[in-house]
Length: 405
Figure 1 (cartoon, rainbow, N blue to C red):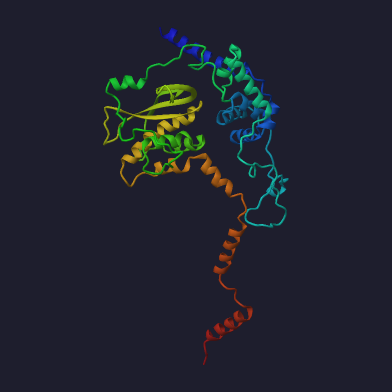
Figure 2: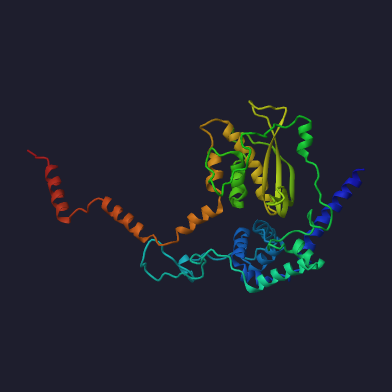
């Protein structure tokens, strides 16, 4: 029995590996060549090299393709590959003044020594999505074929490349290739055993729309979850990792109850029928985390539960969300004086906000910096004149003479 279960587990792992390989190698689109990734996705390749700690554009591009665009996973592959390389020698120390400059900006001075070199940068380009004629014609052709009843084109639009241009998985539920899979939840089992703290509340009936009303500390749970759902993944993971040690200074045991990735229907009320209709699907990742309650003031007969859901297949973000959901609940339960974690989640994890503030530092700031320099110079002590210094020294010497006799 044990062998059969183990064999079934091995078969499932091999099947999962085969699905990954097939999705990467047998996609309907053209094969993505390494030189294309290096030349056209240079920023991603540079991130993989930096986080993988190996300067090798070709290996980083291969890892990026193998990881299907997941920079963190690609960096993991590069670091694993790096650990297999022999160390043949050590590079010599070099002076940073030897840099052959391709881009140089000096925001603090308008006319610094040497030129300002803007170089290749998207800093000054408009944030407008560019659709090439080839992209648009391909999209229109797929739509026309689907409307004409072409099954292959319809499958391509539904499974390989959705009609809105977003990729979908052929092996996910609701793709049309197999019946939808809607399994039961572990949480329902635990709830039926009376082992879960009931976190469901009636004071937050509708999800907060943080795109219209910014989320600020003291926000409802739906606003906190929404903020984390659109947070920058790396920032959210770092914040979760930092808060593994809870506010009560005890390490909290968290187990992942479920990790799901699938297609979620989007419904809207039909203006004529007056009832909800499904208008499309979005792929989401959902995580439910279980935490063992063992604090002095906690119900030790039950588990706590945290929730995370985000767009796309992004298990790192959803796991961090679910764990931070629990951490936020504990942090806020400590009292009014607590809540620095909520402020960090709501105010510092948005990638656009953080990047926008960071990017603006590269803009000219020479007027502001000049005023800072003038204030510094005004606060500096006045220089002592040489003649006055000599006279004072002579006076001090004369006053220090002691008469003899």
